[in-house]
Structures are given as C-alpha cells and as structure tokens.
Image (tube, rainbow over all chains, first blue to last red):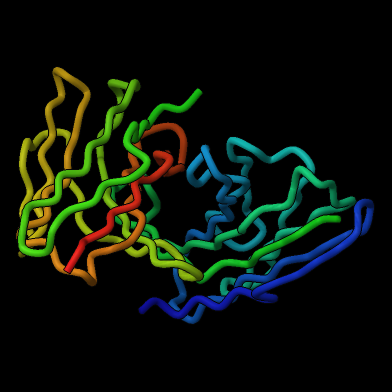
Length: 115
Length: 113
C-alpha cells in the first residue's frame, strides 16, 4: 500500500468554523489530489498539486483552499464550513499524474460532518 | 454533467459465476480508463486500466473491455469470489488538459457464497 495518511479520520464541526484536513505521504510523489465522495456523484476533484507551492483547481473548488509547503504534505482548508461540505474527503497521490494513465493511490479518507 | 456513468447501482452474483460491471462515458477525448475497488471505510484501490488504443486488457481474474464506438467499457470478473464484494468505480482521464480522474458513481457488487 502507498504510504498515505489522512488526519483526522473523522471530524464533526459547526457551520461557519474553519477546518483543515491533512494528507501526508511517504512516497515522494510529485502529484497530490483532494477528492470528495458524495452519493450520486462518485468522487470529484477539489484541488490538486503538481509540486511544492504549485496547485490548481478541480471541478468543485469553491469554498476550499489548499497549500503544499513540503513534498509530503497537502492541506485542504474549508475557510468557513457549510453543511453542503459534509462529505468523505480522499487524498490521492501519483508520481506521473493522470495524463500518463498511471493510477492514483488513495488514502483511507476523512469523514467530515458539518452541523 | 457526469462524463462517466455507471447506471447500475448494484449487482448480485453467485460465487464462481461471472460478474460484469458496466460503464459509459460521454467524452470521446478520454485516453485512459481505470477501474477501482472500494471497501467500506477505506480508500479506492486500483484494479486494472486500459488505454484507448486497446480494446481489451486482462489481469488474472479481471478483464476490461473497451468499445470506443459505443463509448462503453466493462469489467469482467471470473470467477467471482465473496472477497470481491465491494463498490467498483470506473474512471477516465485525458492525456492533455485537465489533470483529473473523472469518476462514475459506482456499482456495489455482492458475491453470494
């Protein structure tokens, strides 16, 4: 299994509070991704990173920001959480990116509930 | 708009028989197609992939078929085993442009012993 650790695994927070999810990898992969999984939608890309300090938006980036100050860490921040951001969040890593057809390797997810 | 679609939310199969999971897509520019398997409380794990220049790829009990003219792919599992019970996602990506895997909504496979 790829060395990917997501923290926390579960979090309950209130509407309007800031939340930061962390993804840590030990594989030294260049690309890191944040997806959310919701019923009826599959997994959708929020943001991704193609190197330290290099990030770009995905399909559902509104309300989220990311940072990558080290190769191994990719942070996802909800500046002001809303109930629509209740979801399961998955981090993924890849050495070559999706453009080469190489697979993404996923962490075990963070279940976030916004009340 | 969902570019990758899995129209069957669930499938039940007897142990030892063939499981066929289907996936349709709308974007003719997709270059790669991948299948993932997901157990509860775990992340998706990669199973098998196929390039758009091929029509079949096989790996042990798993075979993926691609029909580009129909924009359809399928995953065959033979023989099915109880440990195959999971949610299966198909996904697709392009060689240029968006750095993203576009996922279907998943099919829950139950293999009955």
